[in-house]
Length: 462
Length: 174
Image: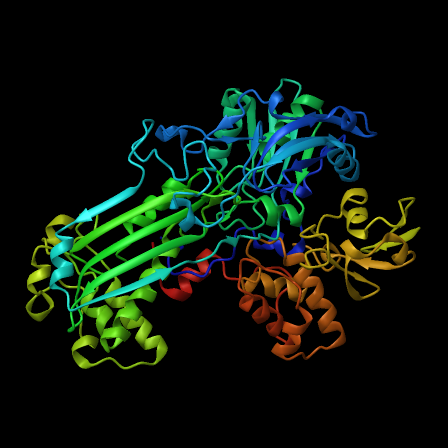
């Protein structure tokens, strides 16, 4: 426990300040490395009519080109371990579904020669209809842009259905008929690019034994190993990952980006291959935080109680599923925020669009719902003419309260957090609100509609 | 072309239009300057050319023929930190570390021409240096500490408490 409460130097701080930290791009190999570049889809959605790499392969400095035909297992899914089928090709085969989707990769003596070869690859596309707005994915005339339909259908596992995350609790119709007011809001946070200062990069060095040494900037070493092994159809002992130094990730380096294709190029050329994405590629083709569409309707009373919540969430997966069903699941757990709401009707969908696939970013799926819930809570307080602190404190999670998923809370921190916010903002709370604690509800804080929500949190804890 | 990098003289026969960043990193193995954007927008490749902060990704080799180039490696090393390096370490100005080389080099150039900058001066000098981790506050704090003359020992030993010392100070025990 020596570290708790102590102010410790960063374990890697010294290397950073003297420029000695070895990031992936700083690794040097004895005979140097080839450089990779990718042919990426110039179209948001298209059928690939023709792909011809023959002329490109003849250009000076070019050592190898990889297309989908060279990949032992091209289509792999991030959630296969949970039984979810695969949907995303490592390199596009017959269709491209987002602008920037990789179609072929080249290894050459220099980045310039690799780029020249990329530009010499002959590609013919037939444009398809596009879909970018998740709300429109449900319109009857919306183009069908993913083989599974416009939203993810495998929340139950390998067999189709259910097609959404569904949370039901209490008697939502009664809550809405008992309410004095219904307060509605729609919240649509946009995509965010993680934009690490270090772009996606990998260096793969083939060993004489056939093992690949993979220098990776991944945030998820063992997951990335599994992804590379799956595509290459090799056992894990054919891969040696070297990682742990990441030039900024924020969730954007969880999905495996450069490692697998660099590895395939290294195998094909029997040379070390480095693939360092340009800043343009990082913005165009690296995953982003998802755009979301959240509709909330709350049944509230004039004296400041939330009786029930109806909520619809659409999570933009982009063109392929990746981890989005997991992100939406976390979102579903948190959709009541830090407040106790006895009656719930929640539906959440993972929707496909012709955008770059989305991924984790600092609280996967949860930051979006926190933004929506807190904005909505303030909106309710404004509508009812109540103090936003008092409205929050009244409905705040208490020991023994139950969440929408039926979890009994043993150590909620909402009350303490709201108190800290008020103090930081220099706002004074009325004495009865300043004196509030997280202790189980009683008296005026335990109205009839919350009686069923109180369990013995202390015994649950024990 | 002749180039002195961190005190070492080099004679180079490279393409005169090659960006200095690539000459440093790929020909001379000086990897402190980073390829963050390679279009002059992020500041991770910043170096000193005859004492002036420059973006090495936008500096063709021919423009620096005969110049004296200093990178982060030329400012100090782990056993002999310069004041800015010590301050960045102590004030947690470096997180992932990828922008740090450029930040420290740019701050060094600032303090050379203006030893007593205001916080606004520092912000102006670092405009265009992107950090995605720290939120910049700790970086500004570190540079301000040097500017107001806070002293740091040559290594990270004394001013930067290790575990044992922290325990003694805070009374935390295991």
